[in-house]
Image 1 (spheres, helix red, strand yellow):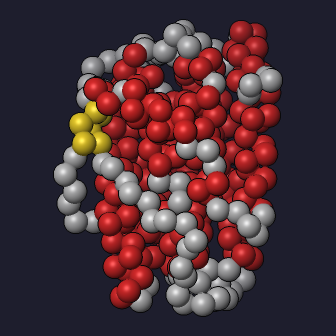
Image 2: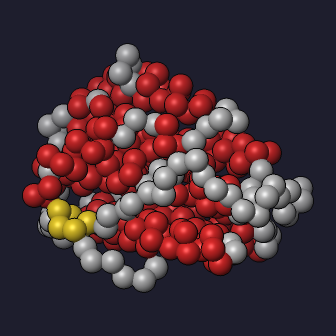
Image 3: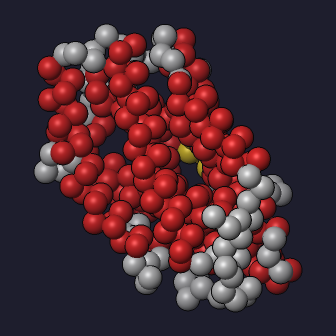
Length: 294
């Protein structure tokens, strides 16, 4: 496998407008404990979302580093074009990383073991040793951001996912979902601006698909084991509803997942109305932050 994706043009002008990204401080206190089964008393829904949270701090640091390096590799005019969006992207992801680190610290205090984080760090160390062209890391970021964006839209649309959830946790997840939708274009546009091609974009999307699903599944099972809920029938009844039900993750996310394979794909084509609606209706839950250098 060659280390450098074959370039198209070095200058990429998207047909889509640059994204204005607002950095927000969520007004909740995650230093205070929450129940082990905080998601409506449901073991599987709690364990599944906990597994997602456990992946975020390492992943979001990687995304920030990748996009910074990607933008810095662009010609000056392109760097200037992305400068404001880069600030917003890094600001949002840094805030997500911070709050999910607090969340994960509560999980650790409850006896949950984050095995996923260790695997992710080893994987990133291997990737670093390969000394790949920076477009590869941006392609990985773009692929993962598509996953989080379609997952976010699903969560915003399907109220049963957080039914009965502890209010702080519900606010955290819906805020995170709204912002994932908001910055869904950034990594994809940076990859295109770097001259990244379709072959590597799709290669890394297939890789991320398999790795992402395996990581979340393994950590969810570990969380259920730690919660002594792995062998309870109610756990798997909930799993079937969440993942395979009529409004479940697999059924509702398969079509937007598959859309990534189209040569005409662009993240902005995903509906963002639910994200905008949540941010407008819940403005009292956060404070807009002043921007600092990325």
